[in-house]
Amino acid sequence: MGYLAKFRVWRGDSGQGALEDFEVEVNEGEVVLDVIHRLQATQTPDLAVRWNCKAGKCGSCSAEINGKPRLMCMCRMSTFTEDETITVTPVRTFPVIRDLVTDVSFNYEKARQVPSFDGGDVKPGDFRMQQIDVERSQEFRKCIECFLCQNVCHVIRDHEENESSYAGPRFLMRVAELEMHPADVRDRREIAQDDFGLGLCNITKCCTEVCPEHIKITDNALIPMKERVAGKKYDPLVWLGSKLGIVRKGEDTPKA
Image (cartoon, rainbow, N blue to C red; front, side, top):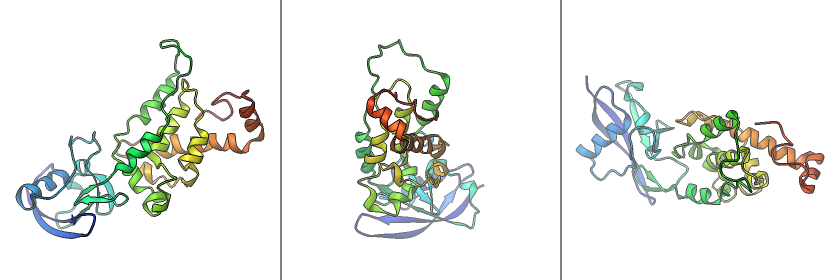
């Protein structure tokens, strides 16, 4: 059975904006994105919102709903009471373009800075991976690039000055995936620490908490990567072995 819900939606652009109140019909089984679409169709045809699949797989409809970063297509209206006011705002970390649409180009710039996979001299078909390595890679590749982890990470959310030196959890996870790949020969530990700001992460796990794919970003990517960096940087035997080339990648630290 339907009812009228109270919505408070941010309207504006990069210059200025404000929250506007609406009453809009809600039907059984709907998600927040359904209601935003109904607002577009009935009251605010110029409301800007980014979306694509409406199935939680494209990562386009990221927003902050009652202050929590979420995908609008995965946030069911049944989780709210009928008399509750639902506030929808753009993700806070990135510049607003218009209404609920933000400029996430920062993330694509960081993505281009990640060194690509380097398989060395191994010929196609000659390398065999252990199942544990396959499963690790599969977990990291579940990422739909909604950038909610980037948005919630306080290192850039609360400190814009860190943007040039910090890649954020999504791309530190990508670096970790390649560093842990047994067929990749490139040593990415210095890149993670010096270029991507791994040391700025203080493992609050807020990125893991908001991930719609339930990837254990902190436990399975960031902490193991910190261990690898610490092993190379602070263990004198590991440091010397790396310099002399007698310690191969991944052999100087516990398996992640």
